[in-house]
Image (cartoon, rainbow, N blue to C red; front, side):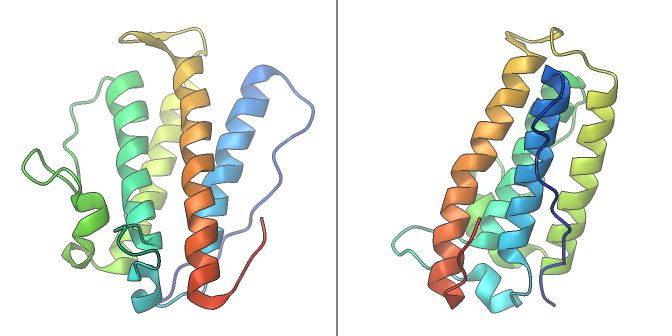
Length: 165
């Protein structure tokens, strides 16, 4: 099993606020997958920056949980349980890499992103989810991906020397 191929398009440069924010979010989603593309299971699980437990597969698992938490729980109001972590093992999205087959991790990530996009289809940026606006959540998600994609850059370069945006 290798990570799936992804077609990444650039974020729009012109558009209204919603178009730009969601465009940047999709760009960063695709960037994370691009950083994993072509790597085998061992490479995806490699913790290349010891003693950190970060790995590319762990980042995909983590971002699945982040998508699920902010969009499905906060904005959508769904009562969905975590997939990869628990109260007893709060870092298992990063740490328990053998708990789920790699192919399933990518399928779940892609499915979660689609569910989150559907939630955003009916949400306005000015809507309030708990104590935050939907706008804040989308901006935070762009920031979260950008930060973790920086980690992914370093991990990928350490694994096979691949660099790029």
